[in-house]
Length: 407
Image 1: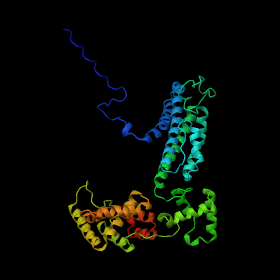
Image 2: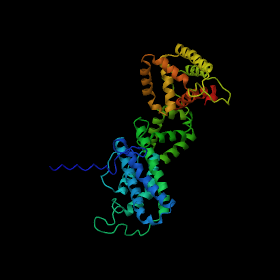
Image 3: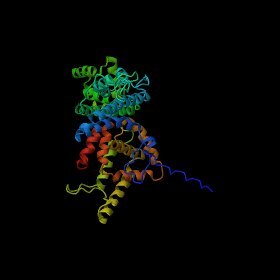
Image 4: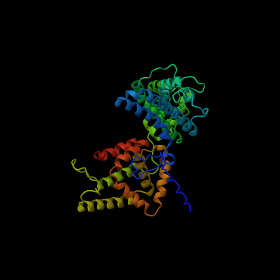
């Protein structure tokens, strides 16, 4: 009786099998990110150009120049499309672009949109020579991929030579421009949800304008008129648009502080803030400059007497704070600390404060919050940073002077 043949052993996938050693596993698909595409092709172009020059791969010049230039072009295309997608989703860009590979028309579409952010407009202008160069040899992404175009004509017919060193040097600049464009784009889209902008000026622009203006008390002076002219020329603002920008600046805590106009906090008073730092200072007394240990070093050699004294001081300070500050003031202090530490914007202050109040409503939440604040060696530094962002510059300077050794 004939025995059935054993089925052939399945071969591992030549590209997507995963070995036991996962050192070189790369995240793609559901574990990847759109930005990996945006960054990856320009990074690959530059890495390949650097490799040729560093390894003196003269024989490979003629073959590798094509993927170098194609990767560069594709990286530019992906960057422009990424920008359009994000700007459309944020409502900043009103009209989409046809789905094609024409990088010149994509760039022109963004240029003509007059996006309300000086930095993004600058980066788009910086892209122009690279867009025009690549578009002139390959307007649809075909010339750098195939030896002939769809009509059978030789690709790159009028470009007999390309210099790897020139290409590499240009790629270094292009990579930075594309990274800067992407980073400012992501910043603009995130800030746009907060409302601190106008159609012509982003939040960053308004902050710059606020720094260009004299104090609010001097707006009837000649210095204001001079500053106004400079602002209008730089940002191309009409008189009405300039007034709109001023309204947005004065409505913002951080921006109005640039004009010498301070705001008040929702709950925390200046006296309560000073008392909090006084009590925190008892937990973290001034140490000799040579002693860098602050708080409790949980991984170092334990000095049990120091540890006992630390927790004793912290318990005493916590009791004073709980007896003196209202729950709302403690929540406010907590919010300001995290706002300063994490670099959040003052427009998020009210929402973060409401969230902190909810946290304190949980069992023992208030005590744990105070313990947490008192344990932070960066409490003063983060409070000062948060207060400045919230427009409480005088209080920030006062707290700074209380413990300059902790800044």
